[in-house]
Image 1 (spheres, one colour):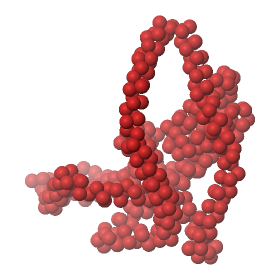
Image 2: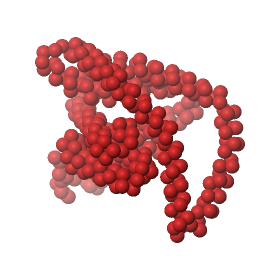
Image 3: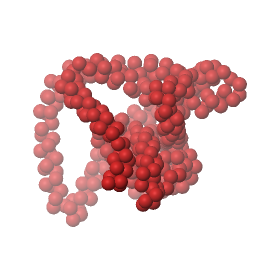
Length: 382
């Protein structure tokens, strides 16, 4: 009976009934929402409009806030430091675009024009190899299957043309959203850099005084986890792009600058990004010559070795403490649920969930030690 009373106290005592009632009310609210969700359509439009610039502003905030803090240490007022930093980055970015845009434009146009030829030549080479290999008997069957699918192409094109007006509307909507994002992003970033600490104090004051210390610890841990990941991942991706550009130049691979930029951008997504980045480079190298493919493989292995053993350990450190298998699973699940946005934001989102889960488990261990620790042994609490 005593153990039973301890267990009831452990799970919350009478408060457990209030918790159950609270969750039941949440379930009822969700059910009602599914029935009258059309009422909230304007709110959904507002949220979908501001979510992109807010996310971009938070990413830029974690990158620029340490620099603004450093300028404050040199007795530069925060608002002037923000203005100087934003103007300096805007000027540097504009200058970089003006200097590199002609080269990038020329390479991209040439790559877009030549890439179908690369694919065609690769297909011809693959076809010759398949016909002369043990897979030859199955080649004709596969070829016929592809041609059958292509025969349906005119019908699909007709369907897409009939939906053309809807497509125009979508393009117009996309352009509008892009303009809104470009305008609102720097404004949100400015106020985040200026009042970010005030915002955290405001959020903490929303909680009852009893829970404010815990809320402060959770927010600080979230800030550390997400900030370290964003800063580290962008630096790592930039270093990978630079190393690959140098490597591509050394081996004489065509479109080195464009392929390095693609690698840097996709490397923001851990594990999956570098794999995606190597595909266009590998296609160009295969068409060039088998020796070029070998040189590309050597460059890629060297860059991955440097990144895995020197760059990431020193830049990312042990802050995230996420197993590589967990990262891959999170990326796959987030990608299936939310598409490209999920792949990019999956790991930071997981880091936030992990902070909250770690806090809940910490409270669970303390509560278990309080009621059952003397009888069965206590949890180790760091």
